[in-house]
Amino acid sequence: MPQFFSRLRVGFVSFPAVKSAYELAMSRLEKTTPAIALTEDQKARLTKIDREIDAMIAEKKIFLDNQLAKGALHEQNEIRRQLAFELARLEEKREREKNKIRTESSEAV
Image (cartoon, rainbow, N blue to C red; front, side):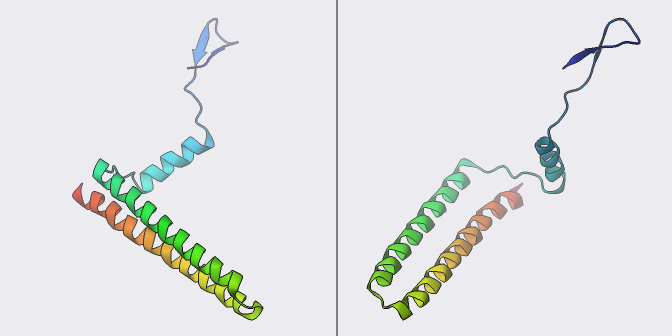
């Protein structure tokens, strides 16, 4: 704890440590939505989901990039739209699957 010299009294006065804005925000967040403790199995399953979805995203990007290189100019815009749609769909799938695992832990508690 920091100590400051008091002008009114001889000696030192102790003040509690000042929290940063980040620490204050995290404590408020913890009150509204408590942190969920995950088991090692759940952490491994979350990591597995990330790896699988990342692999699917890479596969789609490679395939559609090849199509983009081969495609005519008027087809390229449609391929770009398709790529954006596929990436968004895969990200939604990732979050849906990860939320299932996270809710398993909150129901078990």
